[in-house]
Length: 275
Image (tube, rainbow, N blue to C red; front, side):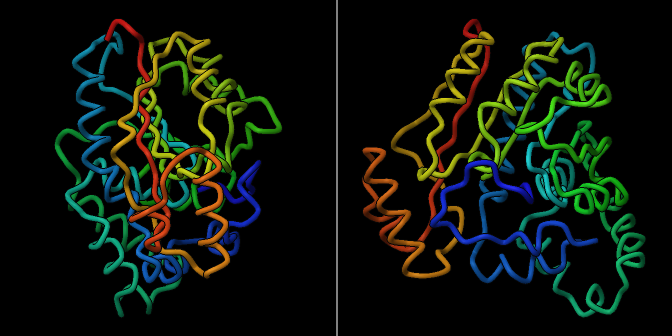
């Protein structure tokens, strides 16, 4: 998740202090008790979507994935390694990890992830405004490239444009709201291969502006309106009230979801209409 939100709703709790540390330990200590689980739900979805994108062809090699608001690279970890989100939480809260300096943890994690690397691992590019977080993910081998850029306010660098040109799949879990249609426009303007988009979006955040921008670039977006995925517990009654109000305003029913205590996301899959 990006460190500097562009238009995230004002009633949502901010966790800016944990998004740009030298390593993920503070991030995990804060979010694990809140049952932050959306990367878990995305793990199998992103693996299947990457396989479908590969089968569709046109990439000239392995499908390169661009993970938006990648933070410390957990989506890349779950995509490319034999590991679960609960195992990552246990790893970063273990006494062994707690005793290490950030530099020592990086060396420790290089071995941790290398030992769990999947044979079908795909190249992953990470994009986030949190420079320390993406550098950690790059240093331990989760990312093949790391770009600390804010496309809401600045055009992509030449290096990022070159990376996007070879990207076959864009993924995001929970970052929409921190990023908007402006980021997607900047990225899609640099594409060379057909790019698919797989996005988990909070029901409190309007996604239609992004869908419209993707459509302008030839992508059709589908979603199952009956299926939602829990993101995390609310931090307070006030945050929950605000979320329920936003969901009702969007014309959705919060019963059993936001009203029961969790933020919920919806999965949007975008691809060329011929696929």
